Image 1 (tube, rainbow, N blue to C red):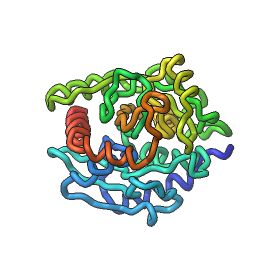
Image 2 (tube, helix red, strand yellow; image 1 turned 60 degrees about the vertical axis):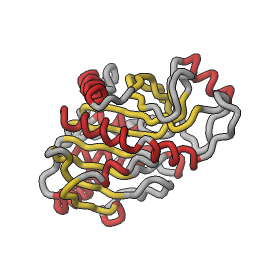
Image 3 (cartoon, rainbow, N blue to C red; image 1 turned 90 degrees about the vertical axis):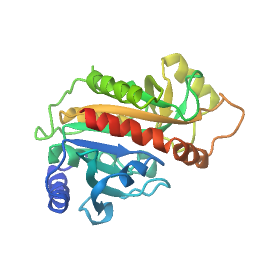
Length: 274
């Protein structure tokens, strides 16, 4: 596996900074169908991924493919509307390239969001889940290969991969906005096929509450670079075997559209508290 090249990351970081100026301390990566938050930013500067050197395109439906710098309730924030996925054929270094750029830009707090399938049967469709921990079943790790000390140490600790401080802030934001939030473990698989009912039963036995095809590599890279991380999953559908209906991507987008206002309120409240 080939790790990210420092010079390529630095070139991309310079291109972003040249266009947005001062970089906010907080960045948000927006998952499938969750890009509406970027549209809520005031005084926004939009930088398409296509004009940033080395930056991978976001080609999945529901991912706009833009860096958006702006303000919300007086707080500056950087939003990434869309991400590259391993299931598109990208290497781990490519799928995590954007997070490397954020780290090099000096982002201190990274909020990662995704659309996920619900494994915990107590979760309602459309629930927002704070990620407390994860299980990596993607069969790879983005830190495999030579380690560049300019990015981080060889063996980063993952004991508190998801910041307790940020989870507490998110719970406070949810309470203030009268939004119910769940909390649980996210399990990551490569996709792009949805999981089988037998796999979901196995994941439930392992302690997973939700399943998705992203986020975990980004968390590993963010922690490697010393960023504080929060993770939020929108439970857009119940995982295979929980309900009798087949799984379709259109359901994911429909659910994220339905919870749009709650999602924006939760992210806004979290951003303004950190």
